[in-house]
Length: 129
Image (cartoon, rainbow, N blue to C red; front, side, top):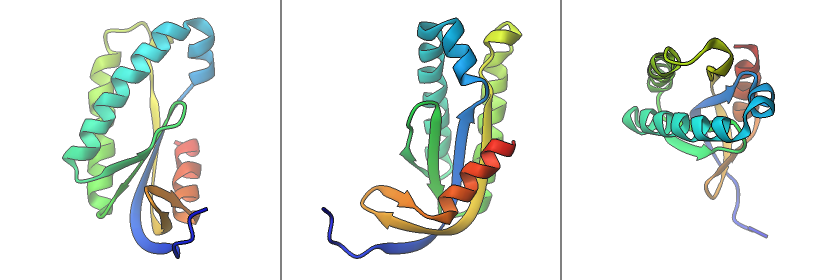
């Protein structure tokens, strides 16, 4: 067990999740995994370009942190634009749309992981997007 004291920091948290992921997987698992892998590369590159860091990417979710909320918002806009152009070539039922929530808040840092309401609120906002 990690006995280091928890560190707190203020961070802009971006949480992105695929809308209708279960349906997409049910219709075409292999195609969905391929598309998700490609789209994650686009998202990871955008996060890095805007000075952020991908913290975790379980399932169809991507969680990133930024020092600046402005950078997080600009990153989200660029992600949506890039994915919209990729989706334009696909039939509507196969398009992969990401919902994105951003929150500026206090988080707990343990190693490479982030915890706390700052993360939870970003995830809740993503669910409302």
